[in-house]
Length: 491
Image (cartoon, rainbow, N blue to C red; front, side):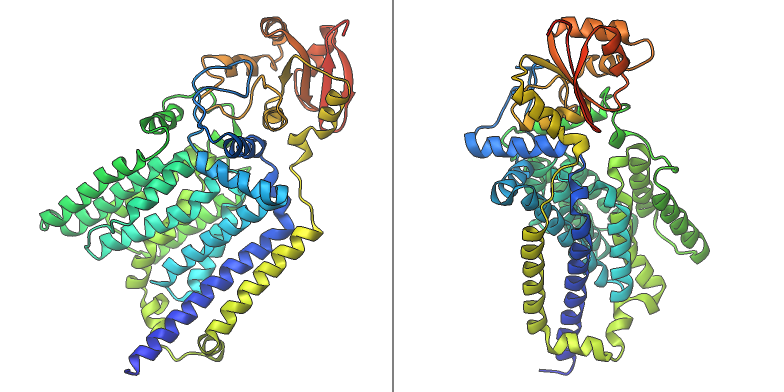
């Protein structure tokens, strides 16, 4: 064995240890804020869909959860992500769900650090990964999209690496497409990212290697075929495009709204700092990568839910340019340096440290799971109001605030409206529901109450329709800091 081989092994071990410690630190930093991952009202129905699948082993094709759109076409296109959430809940309740989400985020950081350290010094790579993890924290919710974060990191890094090295995409990536397609509807991004990686190759080689370009084209076509390996087949793709084709919910739901600098100040500062660094450094990138960066920023600035695209993916595609144009920051320079005492400690005690990390993570998870019981936000659970409804045998159709749709589904109560707006509550329904809360909405609300034979109303404490119910003669039967129940006259 040559001297270079042990040094290379040492370098890989040190690199992996940096990645493991970064992932563990991220996971442990998230534990005190575990409850924040359950703030989203959609977490309730995502878990319920998974639990129902585990119980029935059937894929729904019509809506089973609302009375307003009962029997209308609806598919659980993200069934695998929902099953994972259901399994976690079945194993350890909401603590299990939170543990799974935090573990997935830790995996995302590990993979991002691993791919960045292939090009950059470990300290810089870890810093970039931490920054990205912090900036996309608003999307850390108990929903299937979190499971795709490690996938999109690996997908982007491997494809752009193949492009940079003028190689064909690895065929095993097609398995990631299948997994991604069954986890979450954003799998269509895989086609777009692959297209940009192909453009990057085209910018490098032009038409000088037609056979290589043909393999990239074949890979792109196979991506589309692989995405059809789904219980719903092409319906999953078609359902995804309903949002992009002018879904009326887009302008009414927070995560689908455009970027707002006053609400996302950290993200604004990060983007301006990155732009400043790009201008000052005079770093050069080809037109294909410039287009990719513009695309990720455009999608994020258009829809808040895609904030992870620029903050996760731009560092991955820029790492090779930074390493090439600023050698002191590159992994090659780091590997050529003499190892310091901490790095040698990592290398010499690698296996023991790996075992210690595993024991530490399992120990923290066990202690946190037994000491802290997390629950969804009372702003979405309406636990007191639902207990009142159960104790007083409230039945019939309920008119609910949007944020209570998930908890109603979870507790087996048919909804008026809920978070499945990518496929349901369309055709003017959501716009009409929003209009009932406007200053002139009382006549429309009265019409909705009659049309859907509403027997009771479960409203958020800040629902703008509350005064109208009093004016229409409905009586307040229950109220707390988060929820209000109204009953019709004579009830």
